[in-house]
Length: 216
Image (cartoon, rainbow, N blue to C red; front, top):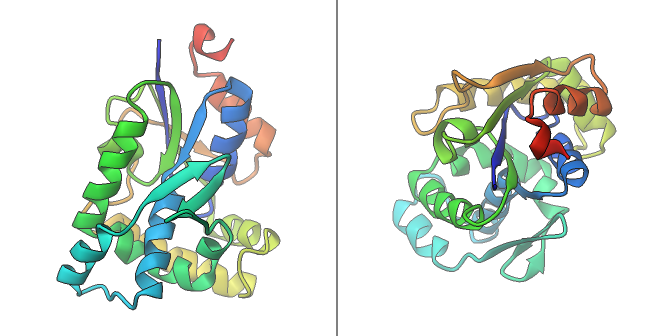
């Protein structure tokens, strides 16, 4: 029996880390949807595509091919796993992920990939839009300060902790108020605030809500 674990939450809440570790523990595949949007963002930036260039966005989407292999992200057969974590991509990914045409393309890819086997997916609208019927729905969060410190310690940014925190708060506001697929907790999702939790504690909290046959 296949099943979907949907992990939503704001930027820096540890979604990717938890999803990756959970996939190893449960021995099921992990699909990092956030990385997919970041890869599209990088492609748009490289090709000077702006937010209001609707025709160019639709046209360029036809040229994008994405693969997620062994935790790495390939954009048109090129490994872009490091490049998509740049400050410039982070600054622009919100408008890209809010674009209707981008979402439709990636939504189709995500649903096709998860048709035949169990998957863990993380993002901002996995449980509300992508897989509203997912068996397990988790909303992972943490305070903006904790999330900023994590990103700083992971050396994903050249900014100071204060600057990262300011950016995170601004992105939270944008993501939660945008018209298309806003960041919000699904009504039946389990809320986990891991501000003061370790990775293993967060994993244990998720596994504790799962059916025994899905954990063994």
